[in-house]
Length: 230
Ligand SMILES: [Zn+2]
Image (tube, rainbow, N blue to C red; front, side, top):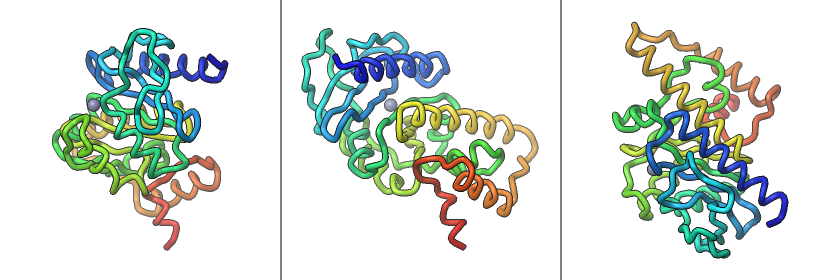
């Protein structure tokens, strides 16, 4: 196993543990993938808790989701790999994809409420807003088809009655979007139980998007970029 691949396998296990500990899924929920090259990927195995993975359990697959190296534990690639492959096919800037069921974000996805209130700089800068993709049966083509309309403008998507999907230039980038989204959802949940949250003004949001572009130089897409064109 080449060193870089070994490190990435370890990183997938670390992120899996963090997801499990942070209530981003129960039992065997969720999956993670990383692109090693155009036609070689690493992904989490199906039927295994993401909190208890070791590097050799990670599957090595091709661009069609087929195993290209026998897994030492005979584990099979994630059943949601089709959704990951669609992200890589439509977004060449993406090298890692994370799917999870974060408790609060999933509650919004179940209620059909997108995360679209501008309530704090971090979520405005990192995500802008998070749309909800139509419900699709897990492990079928319905899920990749449901996320497709949102891939062009967003780096985080809620999956109706299911969970959430984030992706980025590397694994930390993809995972931190999931963490930011869940924190945003939790905050929105708490503040909507209080009197109406005070949202940032359009001008304040535009200033934050500009800051994102000019000072933070964050990679990926952002729905607020269209504000800068006016
Ligand atoms: Zn799921």
